[in-house]
Length: 91
Image (tube, rainbow, N blue to C red; front, top):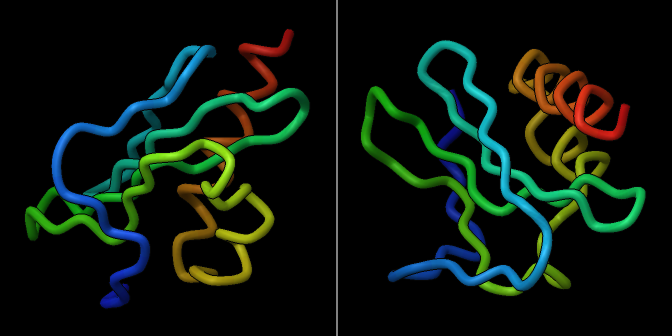
């Protein structure tokens, strides 16, 4: 179980340009956005516990997928879903 809070920002998140995408796996949801050739993670939420683990306002400060894999290795299957979606979008 992940129990770390980081970069939590209350209120609505604003991300200029680009389209946000949502990936879900089990009780977890990751909202991400393509930033050139990087995958930026904007929000990670545990839906069952109604708890936000990460939420960032500024895309430039959003961790990329590699950072998230290091910080939250227990969510590897969710990161795989995000990566798969990225390649489908990048086509």
